[in-house]
Amino acid sequence: MASDKLHTYVFRGTTKGYHGNKNSMEMPYTCTATHPVKALWFALECYHKNPTSAVVYVARIESLSAIGRGYNQLSNLEDEIAFAIQPAVFYRYCEGFIHVPDLQWVLKGFDIDGYRAVKIENLSRHCRETERRGSIPWL
Image 1 (cartoon, rainbow, N blue to C red):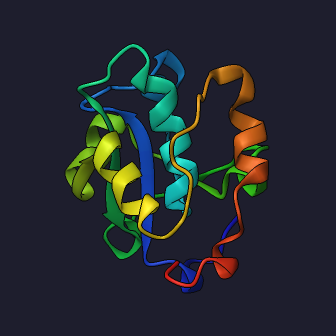
Image 2 (cartoon, rainbow, N blue to C red; image 1 turned 45 degrees about the vertical axis):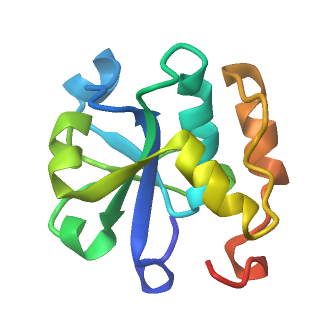
Image 3 (tube, rainbow, N blue to C red; image 1 turned 180 degrees about the vertical axis):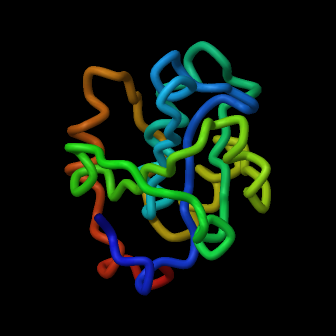
């Protein structure tokens, strides 16, 4: 699991207001990424079906400090922290969200290619190919 001392924010790429799948509502848990570009890949996976509502939510990690944590086998690959709350509850802790095209535009200014064809089948590959946070000066 990523160290909170290194991260100020967590990001969730999804569809605006998505309440999560059955498991995330029943367990409950909400997956987030400490890497905004990796969160973008998840939002891009949603973008195909929901282009006007695919977003990346942004939350301060300190706002979630009282929430329990879950475990994900892909946490290192995805730079993930899973919180033990339903996605609909997680959104209340967020500072806001940024629409996919707006985040892509911001990343372009830092020479980061945010314009990729992301599907569930290639999501792990995109995460693997994403530069580590320390190698991107502003992260």
